[in-house]
Image (tube, rainbow, N blue to C red; front, side, top):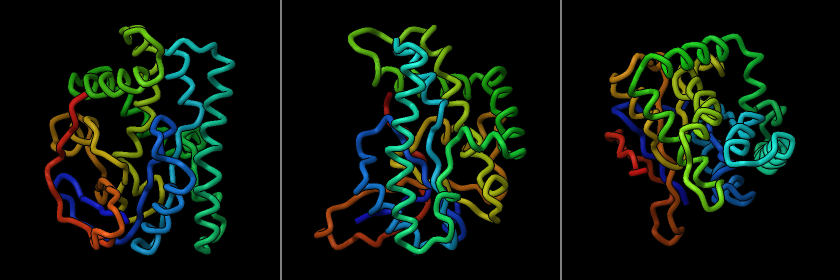
Length: 238
């Protein structure tokens, strides 16, 4: 049902997988989340799932929603992803499954996350490539939410904190989740992963950090258990 494509010349492993779920993407329905977790869990020694928390409200405020409404919608979107992920892990017998489904907001209690976030914010301010990648991704996220108008630089200034908050998950997974090696899995490559992976920015991935794209295939293709060797990152046009 799924395939895993390792990115940027990273070496495939079976240690820890970090699954990113997005409230901005319609594919993350309960059935998809369950199927994805059921497919990934047996292939790795440990698994964690990360979901945007209150950070998602920044994108909604930038799109024109009142702050209180934006927080309410962000909280609801989090529950819609969190609950099926916890249920899937529980069905698989993962001990204390709720502990393995984490919001970005909760990660602020982790000193390693706070340190990585500080480096990420600095990189946004001083590194033109990281800044450009963050702003391009932010424009896309907000653009998927606004109704009938263009995204402005002011909108991006409000919402970019959402994208910056994700950077530690791309650079420091091993220390955040106490693993020797960790792969961040998402449904497509992003400009930030490209900027970090190729050494073209001041941000560096921690030892043991890798990335992969998970794809979905029709079951009758007969390749539902396939993984691929590392490739260059084909960042989609934005």
